[in-house]
Length: 85
Image (cartoon, rainbow, N blue to C red; front, side, top):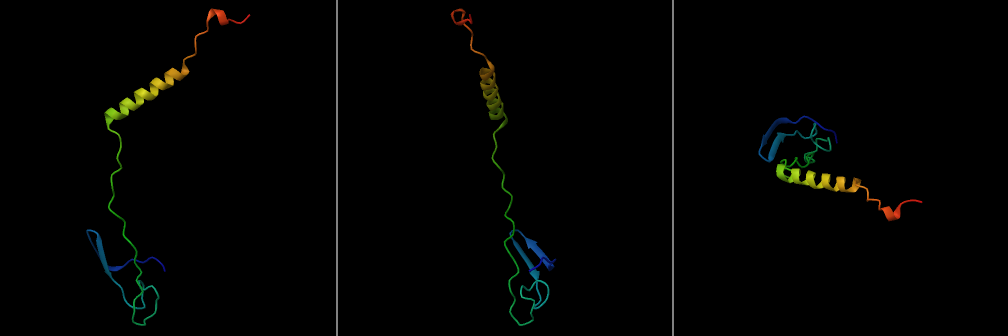
């Protein structure tokens, strides 16, 4: 089946209605034999928010990540008794 612009489209909340003529665009089998083949599918759901961290939590996360990064960059101290000869 192909996409089509439905006639007399009406959308209300989570419902949509439109006119379909037997054997014409919108009838899934394209034959004027009486029954209409349902051409529709599900509509998109309402958009849902994605949970994220708040500003304070992001600042703390950045502070912890930065602290771990600085700690990883530090070199271990070289002791005099381990000096190269």
